Amino acid sequence: MSNITIIADKQTCLPFSGIGINAVICKTSEEAGRIIRKLSEEGYEVIFISESLAADCLEVIEEISEQKTSLTITIVPDFTREFSGVAEKRLKNLIKKAVGMELPG
Image (tube, rainbow, N blue to C red; front, side, top):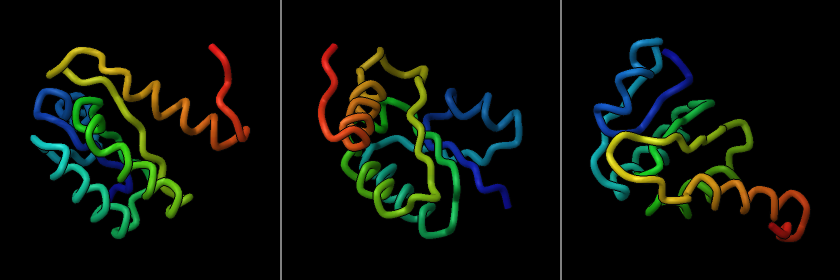
């Protein structure tokens, strides 16, 4: 079993599936949150999630990232929606946690 997966819509999953990454097709953020929890318990090391799904389950992503330091959850752009800024928000939260303050800019 591969320790890498992507959670996204079908169009976004296709390129990842083409290179052998497990794909979980998902339509709602609530479902994505449940899937992330399940995969983290199953020992996955890398989870990609589409930006549109991550937008409404960012709290779950950050909670699990704090609990499972061996798991990397990465937000990737998807084909279903416009840029929402979720990946940038997550990066700012990680920087704030790492340095203890929000950086200007």
